[in-house]
Length: 74
Image (cartoon, rainbow, N blue to C red; front, side):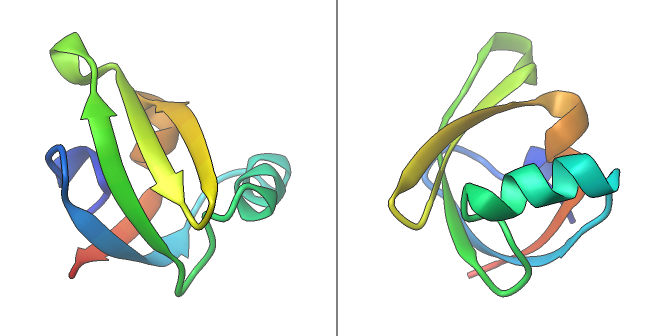
């Protein structure tokens, strides 16, 4: 399961981040790391962009990035 499988308001625990090392580091600095909790705040029309809250940070990610983050629902 990845972020694209979640709906607005869902909370999840990040299982793994599988992407390029540069993107993985960027996500880690924003709070998206294995074992971290995130919440889906909003999903855009056609599910192209996801607004997430990870820790105290809010971030928007494109669908391609959201597919790289494996999660399990809380």
